[in-house]
Image 1 (spheres, rainbow, N blue to C red):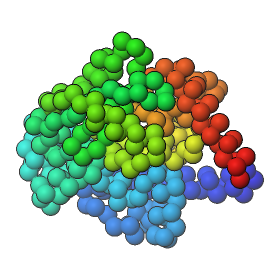
Image 2 (cartoon, rainbow, N blue to C red; image 1 turned 120 degrees about the horizontal axis):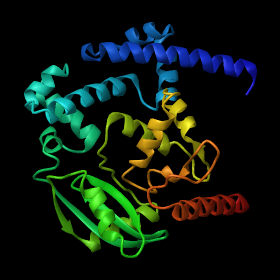
Image 3 (tube, one colour; image 1 turned 180 degrees about the vertical axis):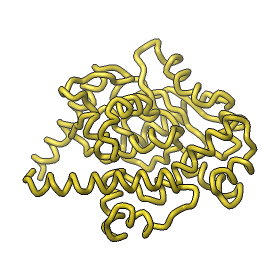
Length: 285
């Protein structure tokens, strides 16, 4: 990278930092794009572009994530949906409902109760990387884990504890169908549950191309949190949907294959498989 590029990156970082501070202080008022751009010291068009590049999301979605996180805390503390909506600067419970669906694929009531009233299907199916355990929510795939022989029950329990109030129905046929879609490139809707920061990290993982690897620090910089490498590592480790959200492409700062929730051997196999696929694609071209 040339010196001019470094200087531009530093300027963009400083602008995004100012904008993040502004939005974190003013999110209840839903500031317009012009106001956030003014805080960053650039035009609205330029601000939207650099903000999306640094954080992986838009200014509006960022403020939505802050509102959702605050409302989620209020709900967990016993507030009603109406109270949580109004305290979060939302005009009505319906806005909180829409926001929670967008961030968690669950309604506010479902999120507050840990999934009470929801029925998840789960099952075990073979995959290219060993036994896969699939957790399927009413609105999409909520979990994909891998297990060595005898570890299927523990892998399921690890996913199910995220929804302590839900009911779970064993359905290996549904798991096999989902496995076919996941590993054959079919359409898969994701129903993710996680904090706004975790979801931001998971979106950054989706931007890593197949066959490439990045360090946790690179992900932290990509989301505009250059000092949050350790927190990024924790969020990567909490990824509920292996393979589709490619946490196996995240490495330690010295490029060691460490910290993979489903085993370093499996991570190595995934990276080798992707590297081979990329080599075949280049040879075919």
